[in-house]
Length: 241
Image (tube, rainbow, N blue to C red; front, side):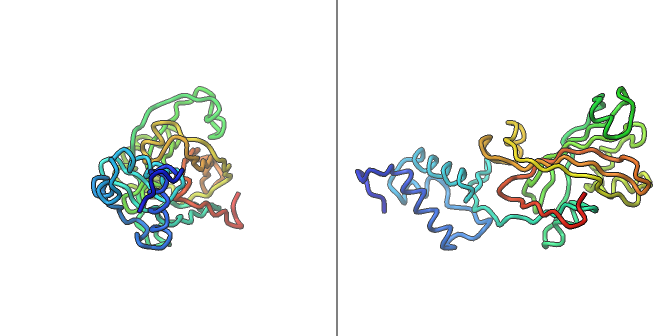
């Protein structure tokens, strides 16, 4: 199945064979590939060679490696709509997926630039809430949300309980809100973000900086959301700000 002495590294040949199997649908999107020992026995190589082949497949975006779980065929990109009413759970539900938010942490901070976006004094206390967005238990984004700490006390606790930004805002009487503007860029993830996403630090992500406002146009929430680049496709609608 592999040709030694052919001038092409054995690990690269194995990677190409597995890539062909994936493209030919021998493994379905989301399916776990055979474990390293099984593949090592199949190709008569050591596990290090299999690991290097898998690393190449991950770099090419064909698979994702989840620590402690195995290697999975990458699913098709999720269409994530960005417009006047950008909603995490609704975006995923429209594609038949269950989406929810888990809180990673929360701190009281002061940041003059972000306070300006929120229409607050430079030294106003802000609430920074770190979260991870999941679709069917798969991480698709890692976010930081900034809010007026006085207006939204205990927001992280409510988000942790309700697992939805919209429902958490409803707890404070905010029935609806809209997106004022979005800025989309490509970037390399910080090591911790890459770890949470289960991807290499060298693979780009999509970063969306955004400001949401309430019905009266008052700034509500400034956020920076980092999406898994090879799993999420951002779709900017006609009404996008």
